[in-house]
Image: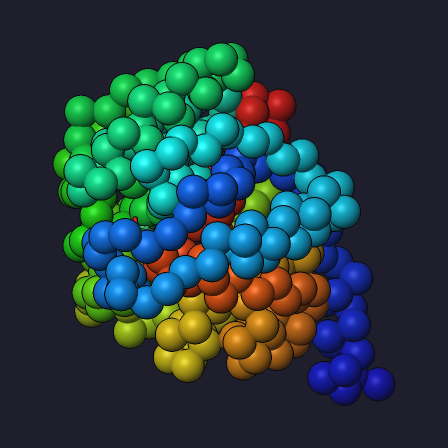
Length: 291
Ligand code: ARG
């Protein structure tokens, strides 16, 4: 019998969780004291203890799922350092250092560079403005690169040269989704060479050219509804089976289940006051040993 249910079950059995290595930063100094994205309202109070507790649930979950989590020491005066996705872009043991768009975060870059060096990564200093894995996502062999608000088109060329990979530029047009990782998520971090990974994205966050590219390259992608995108549903982390998402993204949760993924809900509402979510708090450290 070929009911939709049996199809789903079959798909579910095929999803494989891959052990990841991540870099995170405890939000010890988290607050919102300036505005560099539309989510940040300094007049609205923040609760650092609550941010820490919510962040801890994400950290603990990654460990329970078998992932390795490295920590970078938080710097006083850098409340956004918890968003380690912006701390670099790492493939094959090489780390491309960020150059932040706004002066408020500029001082984080040397700290991340120092961390990469100490951890033995081949550390490459940037010439161009780029915000790391906030705007660069590895999809199979290709780097998907966001522009429009933070990382520049010049950085797309630079990141391609640094890693010797194809770069596909995608222009973001909605200020709420100012980094690529707020509008698109890669669901399969590991695929066989030449295979297209599953992705999910919010079409309205991209210009017409970007939408056309995504449709052509990822015809099977999950297209997420505006309501799920607006609660940072796409700012998620996946190991190929378990997909950590916001509990508010209920439509996306159902779409993931239909495709055989295992969505797990973690609430980072306090960190959303800074305009960041699950993926923002997570930087992938891809070593030479990982496919
Ligand atoms: N307040 C931070 C900023 O505006 C949030 C960064 C979110 N990070 C991300 N990868 N989307 O830079």
